[in-house]
Amino acid sequence: MAIAFSFIAVILLIFLDAKMIIPLTGKYLASLFLTVTPHIIFIYYYSYAIMPDTSTIGVLSALTLFILYYFIKINIRPYPNKKSSSFRLSALIGGKRLTEYSIVALMSAFAFYITAFFCGFFKCFAPLEIIIADILFCFLYLTVISFNGCLRIAAASRRLTPFRRFILIFNLPAPYLNFPLWHYMCKEARDEFEYELCGKKRTEPPVSNMCATKYPILLVHGVGFRDRLERNYWGRIPRKLEAHGAKIFYGNQDAIAPYNVNAEFLRTRIEAILNETGAEKVNIIAHSKGGLDSRYMISKLLMSEKVASLTTISTPHRGCKYADVLFKMTPDFFWRILARIFNAHFSKKGDISPDFYTVMHQFTSSYLKEFNDNVKNNIDVYYQSYTSVMKNNLSDTRYFFTYPFIRLIDGKNDGLVSLRSAKWGEFQGIFKGKHIRGISHTDMTDLKREDIVGFDVKEKFMEIVADLKNKGY
Image 1 (cartoon, rainbow, N blue to C red):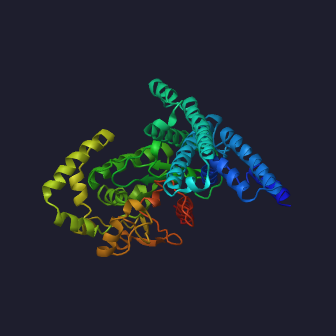
Image 2 (tube, rainbow, N blue to C red; image 1 turned 180 degrees about the vertical axis):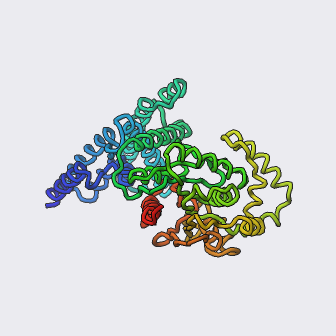
Image 3 (tube, rainbow, N blue to C red; image 1 turned 90 degrees about the vertical axis):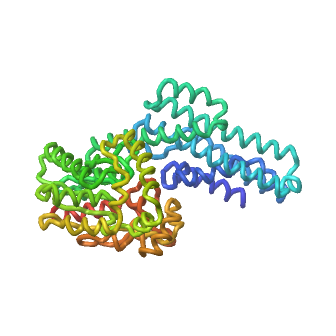
């Protein structure tokens, strides 16, 4: 009975995988299976040692069939979704995934062997030949997968220079010896995939007109970042919006320039967009400091006739109290030294007028109070705002220290901007997430491309844009 059940379960899994109902090569299942299946020698040994009968042999035979199928499947088609990408891009992203899977599985295997050795597991329960056999099989198993991944990237990538391609191929026989190279390969493959897929999406007809607003959408980024398709600040959001009819453009302003400087960038950008599209106005969706840049442009550069709406997301309209505290506690020369470092860095990144010192002071409560007194909302522009909050400092570890600090002095926040400060115009609500996972400042732009349980930022942006469409913008 157990043998029959095992074979039926394996056949059912293969069928569901073939029909893409449960894709076994998906990110999470692949990480799980490739952490367990390389230790098949141990699984065989201990299963038969515990129950040395024919039913165990039958179950292990079914397991062997599944492992053989899975090993062949993941090496042939590691990226299950081929509808949205070409063969070359599928090979490229498949190589990235195989390389990442190898890293996860290798780290897990290493941790397993070290833990078992120090806990005396091998000494008590496994003979030496079984331990050696499992280590050799595990190493061979993962080497084939990593070799496949590296080879796919080397063959499919168009970005790799001949020298880098040579270095990559030269390291193929021993990929485990060069983890920085692994990281570099995965990053280049991911960036190239996103860049080319984004360009492909722009030429495809939209799935629906749900986000087909009357006026084009201008996405305005926050401080410390620049607009680059190679590593889009807005993650997967633009592709999602374009797939449902939205016309998306980017602000392209400096990463750390004062409001008045970036406002000039945005004015020039809007003029170019209107000339290109023939539209009368644009809808601006701005994140963080981008909302302040946009407000200054609308009010002070007399652009209200060319802006239909301004949607700000996690923008510190009333300043950041922690900035007040930091400037009081830290000597001025420290900030000026930091400014030199950051200005030099962002100049190399493409900033024309970087001014870290001024920008940081523009986040203080006193500066924003004066800003709000002088930069008034225009009656011809629709203003609305959204924000998110973290539930604890583990919601996003990059804000592990900032969240509790801001929580103490300024209340609920997203790791950088307080709820109090983010409200402006018609406040539409707070994104919180489910369970213990809150939504952080960078979660709202999909910067990490992370799928959060109970919260899909792409869908939230679709709702925001669809609402603008329904309002006639």
